[in-house]
Image (cartoon, protein in one colour):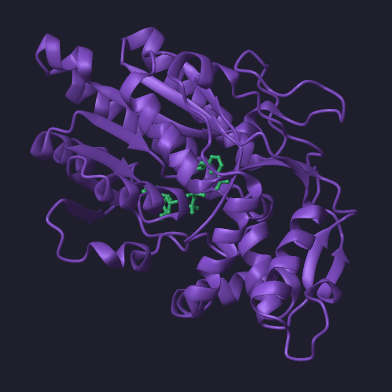
Length: 353
Ligand code: NAD
């Protein structure tokens, strides 16, 4: 048994689905079901006894303690977080509560449980913390990519809260001996991605005939990784990573945001042409840049390749094609996710739902 937190979110649900599809052991999935948590992502697991879903908060130490005592997982994987930079600019309270205080409470519950285990089970236990490359700050255009040695220079409330959580995880290893692993990954894309983030936002807005909002000049550079590759990296780190180590995970795919938007448009032109025959790129509109918008992130993922033999299986071309096709094939999921909380959020961003 493993315990996954945040397993109804984008990456967490992909991880749960991939893990169980590959025939690994059962999962307890603890998720608060915030606006970003979606039970529909896990619909394919209905009736599957290998998946135990529990709605709850990682900050609820008593609940986590009960789940650990009851299920005796050999590992805890922490995906749960507030994850959207724009929301952290509008209000950082939930980011502090979940990403910092929540991670602290989770670590304390796990530490208390781990301390009760027999020595051989203590040695095999793992706490894997899923984090981001955004903790490293912004890179100059010609600077080398982030290695694990790069200093932490977070610039947004989101990345600052994730940086704090990474430090807590590190400290629980060095101070308390908890066998932790941390992964710092670049931007993910793929199925079940909430359409507040760049790629799914562009796909759903394009199909709905709405503007495709691009921040500033669109030249912000990110590294992009297909979510299935992130999940395989996490499985690899869990299986063979050295406790106390951090591993950068990336796709070797640095691209400016505007290029990403044009790629999505071109794929849609091919796979689902507009009724009037005009290219989707005509829907692109430039909007005021996000405050403190980092210009460039790039991940040096050589350590995970050298030590653990992991490399992404998808290229950007194969991954983005699969992703666009997935959204075209799942109109019900898109309609469901665009109702309710999403509609309210869009109204605060662009003035209309
Ligand atoms: P997401 O926002 O899609 O999902 C987060 C999930 O956590 C949701 O299901 C939500 O309900 C749950 N959650 C939030 N607060 C909780 C709490 N207090 N207790 C329990 N559950 C809670 O996020 P994501 O994109 O899937 O990201 C998952 C993790 O990966 C995060 O830690 C994020 O920082 C990290 N990460 C994301 C990316 C990316 O590109 N999306 C890249 C690198 C790292």
